[in-house]
Length: 159
Image 1: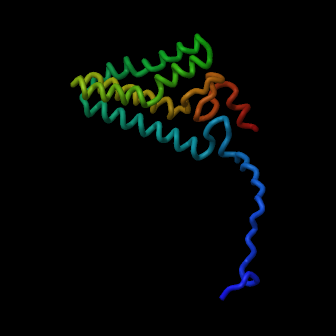
Image 2: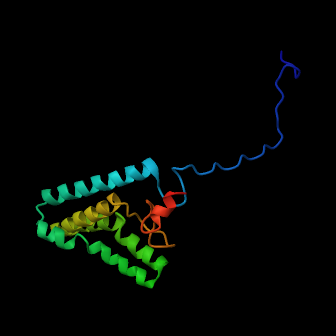
Image 3: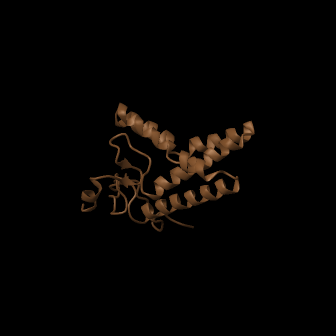
């Protein structure tokens, strides 16, 4: 039989919370850095390569690919209305959601041309990610999920 004297004491006093861990050099509010950033950029290159292979496999004409490749960048015009609107419009044109919907529409409507358009769009997104251009925050054009891009980038590296 066990007695209270042999049982360990239970500490029922409230514990104090530990402070939240501080960001390390690889994590910051400014976007991905170090190995995660490199992996995201490599992922972009692989997406571009897959889109090129898909376009070739679907029998697309390369002249059309070249002509339409930069079309998603028309979303940059959203920045004429300010950084918040610009980021929303840019992100709509540079996330994989819209080309995925276009691919679904291609299958539903039986239109191979739409699938070719989706491949071009995905290729553009992969190309941008490979170069370090990520989805935008509403603060400034250069603030992306992959880190800061543009003229202030080199000065932020020193910190």
